[in-house]
Image (tube, rainbow, N blue to C red; front, side, top):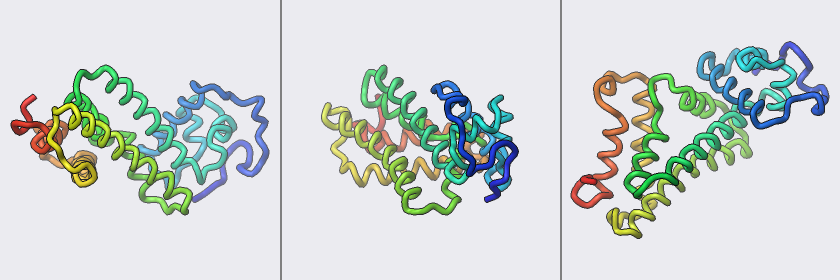
Length: 215
């Protein structure tokens, strides 16, 4: 991957005292990176593109990412942490495990064709990763499984959900959601007039909710 950029060289020391260090600046840099990666991919990605999108200097972007070869994993990890925090806040307001399941499906699936967060996942998965990178990705993927299992376990313990075997159910559910996500991102015509969210939720409820999904 090309590493030449305008501004300080990647190997040069950065005066961190002169760089923005707040969460707001980091969030702005991360959101800009997500947008640029989704739009342009990674082959010709330049730090200066991210800086321009964020309204920051290239030096500031280098401060937040350190160097370009770790950018994708850092941005993905930040994106997932941000998404999971918003999911947690929404789930805390939910009145039942069924509502939390609805939220899980909504947060998992891309919102539309070209969804930037899901496009970022696609770009990251296409890259070659060393063992440390694979561990990061595995942890992020496992995070979705763990959240789904917690919802189903709660519903099962309360008697709202059927007594399904958690590992097998989770594998099936996440595989289905991943397939639907790829369909939505590809722009399959079947989802132009049918909600992928409603389809997925109905399929999960047929296994989980007594009465075939009636809530």
